[in-house]
Length: 143
Image 1 (cartoon, rainbow, N blue to C red):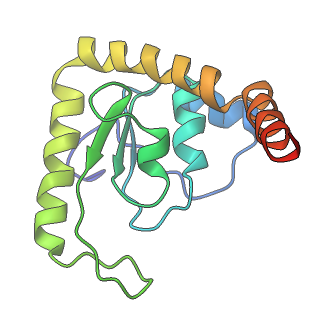
Image 2: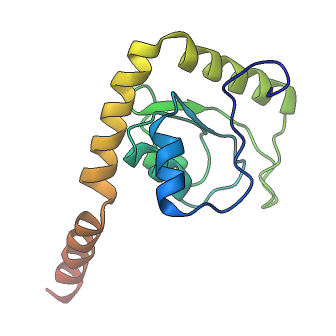
């Protein structure tokens, strides 16, 4: 994709927080085509920077990305052997490409989703929210 159009950034190295935040904050959309992701903290990092996410509807990603609100969830039918391998890779690639096309074709909608993404990350996934949720579970268990 980088050879066919400008503005595509593929991050291969672990970046310092300030560099990552600068890159994410200037993005239009964050794409994470993982086929296995227990939670998807990279998606949360993008959302915290106000960027909507195109992610795979697998693992913990649907817990993080609210389809149509904070980003786009790409459906995937997977082999149930623990690898996450798509049963129909061509369909997954087509659906991923369509979600990416939709994400970049409507910048105003992407910006609205980015605002919603930041709010969702703040309300549900910042450290204070996690501490409150953990405390509530402890209180429930200990009575």
